[in-house]
Image (tube, rainbow, N blue to C red; front, side, top):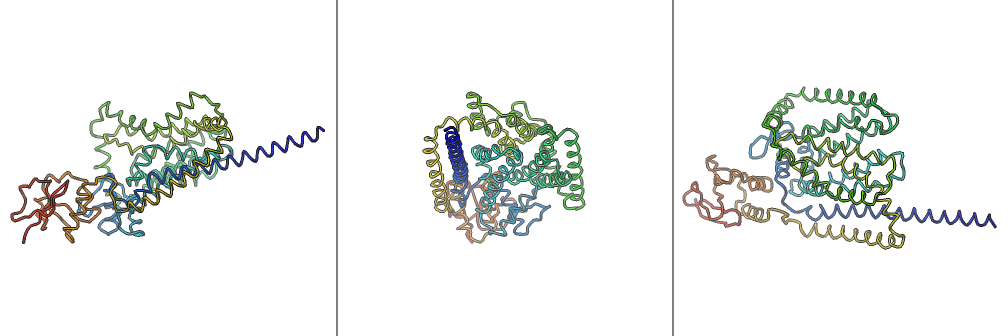
Length: 493
């Protein structure tokens, strides 16, 4: 009697465990489909469309110059003949390789950014797996930091606008990953320190010293496990600094690299540090930006604090990642140049930290939602995500050749290109000197340079503002195009 009861009890428990594992597997698959759907919504519809933030256009112009052999790796120069010593070269070089593979088309920079976004998701997934290598139940929640990464308003914008931070974040994440691997295992200290130094060097020559916050990793993770202590942290850091010093020394054996870094120091670093420090209000700009980009996480944390789910001991390490994220964010306050997208590399440890903090909330929600509701919600999210992905793919092809921003300007420039045909330079009023979007779009999309009247460039075409004839307009010129943002004249021969 009691034997049968025990048998049926163990069988019921086995069936229950199998059912729960099946539900967990479905939940995990659905979560990844949801992440894929969010990625599709953010980037796929505009993948073949034109128009992006000006920093992305400038980087594309420099990459195009490399592709056309107008410039070299350590001598960044645009087709218009202007030097760009304040721009680190690595991401530009990597984008130029994409032009060699896919051709010189404006959608290639979007494809490059999309590839960076996918690689970044993979690195966040691996970072979570590495830190929780010995915690199987937590390791299975690797979809959570990826989901948080996708819902930040900064992520979609950066990868949609071809920013250098997209490339730099790959290298800083790799450096964090290697360092955390050593923290967790205490194995291969020489190899880990060397690899981390290589990734930091690559990050540095992608966007500069913002990447150096990764040096804080070994000190922030002291006693994150029993074996990693101050001695190990100091040894690793000393080796890391030694290797990066050697690598920089090897770089400076090249005269081209030395000239570049000297110019970079004068044009980029000194103006940001030597100039008067920002006002107190301006110093707070980056803090306000940080609050904005992590606002979805803060709302979730507020809800988690309200329901007060139980937090496991290991999950209390979230503060280490949050402090690492702050190490990558707060130093920007000393610079006169503060842009929200500078925060992207620091977002990686921040999403890991917030994901760890929110793990108890995920477990609490999973317990509160009844099995019948799980059976209803999971299919809705699953098939809704698949439908969204397919719709985004369709939109991608239907929106090919359209504009996602600066519609009037891009429409006008399209007409200008059709009318000026093989011209490589177009003269313009002096008011166009600071119309950077116009000049950069024309150069990137059509390889046409805008020249001011005093440059004495021989051309039959002249640009003015709408209905405002410039004083330098050549005699005998005839208006051949009246656009929304500019007018085009042609000199009659």
